[in-house]
Every structure is written in C-alpha cells, then in structure tokens.
Amino acid sequence: MIKKAMLCMTLLIIGSGCVGLALNLFHAPMKAKAASPDYYVAAPDSSPADKERADLVATSTDAIRIAITNWGPGKDILFLPGTYSLSYGIAVQYDGMTLRGAGDSTVFQWAGTAGNCLFYVYKDNCTIADMQLNGGGQNGSAVKVEDATGAELSGLYAHDFGQTAFFLRRTAAAHIHDFRIDHASFGMYIEGQNDDAEIHDFELTDMALWGMAFQTSGVDQQSKNFDVHHFLIDMAGPCETVGRTCAVTQAA
Image (cartoon, rainbow, N blue to C red; front, side, top):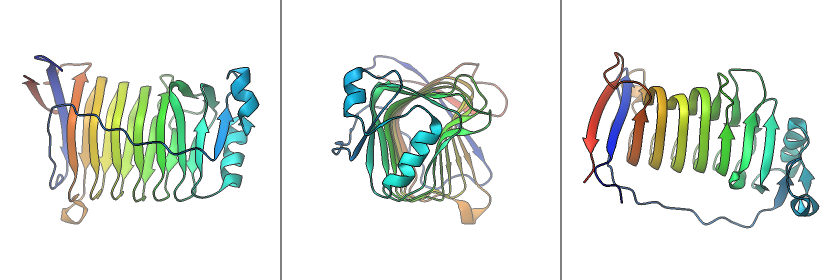
C-alpha cells in the first residue's frame, strides 16, 4: 500500500477533449489468465532447452514476420526468454492474434530506423502481453494501435522511447492495463475517437514532456465511455511547464 506517495498526474487535452474520462488513484491489479500457446519462439540467446522446444529460433526480424504470416489468424504465440532485436516493426496482421512473452525476461529491442514502432496493431481482438520493450533511446514508439477493436496491451514494460510509448488512434474497446513506461517523451498519445476504452493499473516514470495526451478534432471525435483509473505518473521535469495541465495529489 502506498503511503503519502507523491503523484504527478499529467493530462494534455487538445481540441474538444474526451467525454466520460474518469480518474481514480488506488491500485487494484488485475491479470488475465494466459491460454496455452499454439507456437513457441526462442531468441538467439535463449537457453538450449528453450531453443529445443521452440517452433522457431528467431535469428532475424524477417524470420519472425514470415512465421507470424504463415501461422495465421487467432494464434497464440509465446516468445521465450531472450533478446529479440528488431530491424523494423512487426505488424500484427490477423484478427485474434496474441503475441506474449515470459515477462521482463522476454526483451524486444529496437535496432532499426528512428520513427518506427516495435509493434503495429491494426486488426481486431489482438493482444500484446508480458514482455519488455526497449527503444534504445531512438525516436520511435513501442506499440501503435490504429483502427482496431478489442485490442489488449498488458504486462508490458516499455522504456527509452524518444516518442510516445503507446499510441492509440480510432480504436474501440481497447483494454490497456498492468504496465510500466519509463523514460519516454510521452507515455501515451490518444488521438481521435476511442470509445469504450479502459486504461488502468499503470505507472509512468521519467516522462520528458507529458504522461498522457488526448487529441480530438470536433464533437464527432469525442470519445465515449473512456475510463482511466489506478495509476501513478512521475514527470522528469517540473509540472508547471507551459503546455501541460498538472495536478499533484497525496494518496492516503
């Protein structure tokens, strides 16, 4: 239980704002039960035992992309402990796909051109879960979700991204929870209409510009039933910087 923890809640609202935004403060973690994977993937530095049981030892980004394409819709893919260096982002191109790791010991590390993202989700009911996402200080993002329904991001530790770690645009029923973001320009950037979204149980630390930013363009893009709760945000700079709306609160 957090005693008198100093919170810096940073919300930047651009345009008309969001309808139905709820902010609460006390932590009550929730974890989804993982299903048995359809396929196992190992990294070049995974243990010999994990390489032995893996369906694929991913020696390149191309190998991961080709495997995901061949395995098809609705598959649950487990990335075993190890470091996966990506030279370009992985597009989750089928409905119902799950890409998950074994926690922080599964590391996706950016090694490509600045300005890209590690994972791009544009299909419905997809999940990215339980892994560490390392931006390496590059000017890119961890996960971008766009024009998709029912996306779930959970159990992620994203750090060292020069842009926004998580980016949402025109989504519906997104569920983003139990995650940490450390050292990024923006924690989350939420653009356009994103109805029935729930974002909860998360910590943002060492944010350079702002924690969460909401951008809309007119009444037709205002999000409905958008709920954010149970979170901690800590800024790298002073909260009174021009262009941010901040509140400092003490939790009992």
